[in-house]
Length: 300
Image (cartoon, rainbow, N blue to C red; front, top):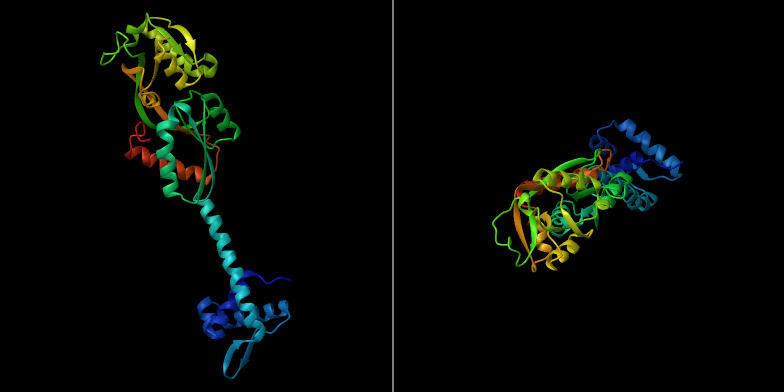
């Protein structure tokens, strides 16, 4: 047989108090129960742990050797319990974060900084990706939490972190580049560069509705799946595009951002509702608090 933790705790208490009476009081049990447990422990070990005589109770030579070992086992057990409690509280573990390429530049630094400051024991694994793999990763478990434009798909929990102005991006020197703002209908005769429709069909359906409401179908002359690629095409004079204002941080020259009247786009934190990770709940709370006090479109 192997001693249980309760017996080890009783043994350490008697050793530290040098008295069954005081140890029983400390442990809030009867002295009889304590004596029975110590006797049982000695039978399991096949050794006498205490010498008892008229002068009191003191450790035997064997008991003195056993005391540091018992304390080590109890300390390790306490550490194991603490680890479980920290895991249940979401303070340790591993969380996989996905950032849409258009949001990573300004959003990843403040989000990761806040999570590391408040949850230093939590391992954060980050990835920058496009919308299709991001959504697939949430559903198949590759990612726990993502930061993205609204993916326009059911089955995900979402929380809006920020809302920013949508802009038309024009090449420098464009006749409309000096305007304070523009309406989409004023851009009907322009050539456009856009992401491929295959990159994320739900977004393109939203774009279709907006162009239709503005009274035209865009003349799409080039496509690129990345924001950097679109900005490069605009800077080269190939066409114009529409992006959230935060994308201006990705290219400082060759392009001009002009707000589109009345158009705004949110940035969301999204996750799978069935994900039971305690760390996920903690990070969602941390980022929600961060968003309430910080402009995340400019915080990076």
